[in-house]
Image 1 (cartoon, each protein chain N blue to C red):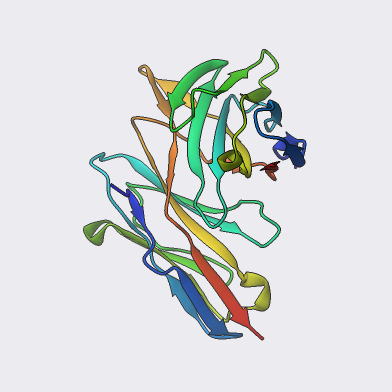
Image 2 (image 1 turned 180 degrees about the vertical axis):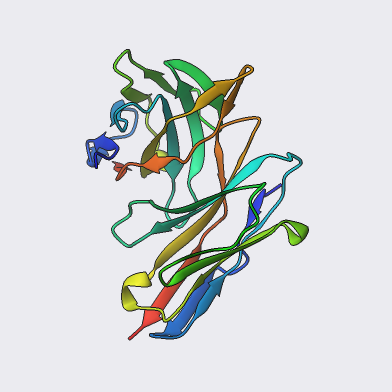
Length: 114
Length: 119
């Protein structure tokens, strides 16, 4: 069973629009970690954020913000005032305390149209 | 800041040949991970090493093997290559802490990847 679900396969927005990327996860562990990575067309995976299961405080970093809701097992990512450079595939990932491998979602391809 | 280094960046091989991918983790990171990402797919975990010992195993084919050396760099050896092995291979590293026999997961930082093409 998929541990991380990113239901949005592709999203297109016009520059300066806000966009939210959804991530729903599944785990039986009480301690776990959630991550977002960005994969631009060049291919590398860029770390964006890490959140542990005990910290439900939402985080804002510039135009990026993350909403962690344990009650709904979601860890959504919002980009405010999107820019063309935000065009990339975004992966949500889960790491459980029992092991150290990452479980990636299938990714959301974001295209920001100028 | 130093990042994860992977070599080569691109590799072209024929079917049934062998390939060796190398990964140099961020200095002082003690854990290395290997992932395979097929076209349009999410990265799939292959294997990881903590302090030079295999710590976790994912969907790594029997034709592949890996190890971590005393300087913490890692190599992924791939034999009897098949067309389906064509993919982007990522290495990641992290600094983990072992507490009561369990490894506490820290952020994985990924290298730029090696793009393997099997003809």
